[in-house]
Amino acid sequence: MAKRVLVVEDNELNLKLFCDLLRAHQFEVEPVRDGREAVARARDFDPQLVVMDIQMPHITGLEIIQHMKLDPRLRTIPIMAVTAYAGRDDEDRIRAAGANAYVSKPIGLVRFMEEVRALMPAESPAPEPVPAPETPEAGTEEAPQPKGPGLLF
Ligand code: MN
Image 1 (spheres, rainbow, N blue to C red):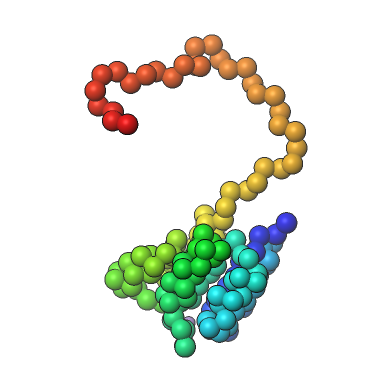
Image 2 (image 1 turned 180 degrees about the horizontal axis):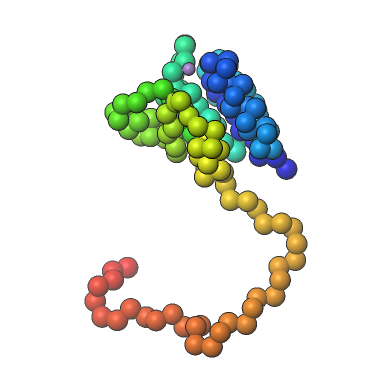
């Protein structure tokens, strides 16, 4: 089943670019042009990832991230912030709000997809019978125990 990505972006050209790119990589995409709709649309669409523009009218992406992190159902969804901001302080604030990745525009297509994939939950294994485990090599079964002081548990 295709993974779902919610794309929140007020700039029509960027929105189309991100959505086209994601669809070309077999993601199911939900575009959101008005940030004020983002939280409700996230609840409906149940995405595995949110791509979040930061600079938007009415409500900033930073505020949307803060709202999402207060919602028990939305707080675990990874968020990839996409912004034209270049300042270190901005990046810190956006990450502190809960964004898992921060990418500044203009953003290369390869980099964009790398960031998307890095944030996707691990692929669930194919529903096939698990093959019998290989016979472990002799002498590798017991891990060496740490000796002496140095490790605290
Ligand atoms: Mn914008």
